[in-house]
Length: 109
Length: 283
Image (cartoon, rainbow over all chains, first blue to last red):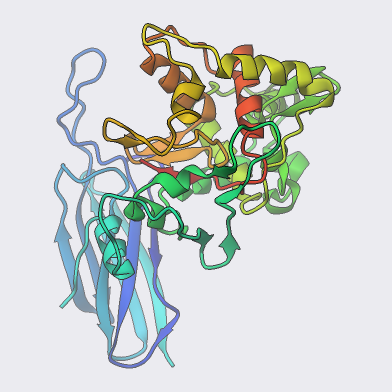
């Protein structure tokens, strides 16, 4: 498992129904591309976050495939319409099989 | 339909609406998280031959400037988070962590970054923040010192720096430090390397001009440690000094050497009055 992996998200505490809100996500991750070599000339194996998803109350908001050219600590920002109070679930999938999840509730008001 | 922006720069530039692209907004105001107002331009201290001293932030492009205005967007804050974990982790033979003595970092380290480097009476020497951190590690915790310009050192400096954000840099230049300060000043004005460049040739004589594609700043260090987009990590003051001296095609002093400590003291004092910004974001 990659070291120091820590997901973080920024979601407004509340929104009015039907409002489009801005969501910011960042996961600290080395995103080793697999193209580099170490000082002995051996390839450093690829280790990246390969998929990111966000769901709201079970409904998919976004599903992203990440590729090796994406830099360290990938930052993904997007908007989502909030029809009702509920919970955003953010999920990152690591090459090594680890899955990192973060949830944030949002209120209507 | 969700909109995806893989870079903050694109999204935030769009938010600003006025983004002009590659040039900086030199008169913009730096307010972090909508609450910490920073002094990025102020009258120069008496010992600095400028009318006005300016934070490096005022020389950066709007996209880069915006990254520093919100802690979530500031990639340097990732390392601050890591250092918070380190702060509470016991290391070394004494079984102590930073928190064992200093407790809550937010109160105990407030204002510390603003006055370093400073004179340490017991040791009888000028100490940088990094030297003090390593002194704690070796003598209080019984742990191995960090390499002077290493990542964990930069992260710990960033954590301590955050507690002073918005406070004016206020480094003493008289009294017991004056000898070191004079030495730093001499280094600042000495030409080094095959290109025979001193710090002053770029950062005093030519600031605000372009050096090829780079917009030269006054070389202020109030924003250190600095997250640089070019290497995607926190950079220490001495790491930056080393890079600059290397670019003159000289053999550099080592990070942590007495020469760089003196230079840090002198350069820090040139920014007296600017806000502590660390971790700042630069290109």
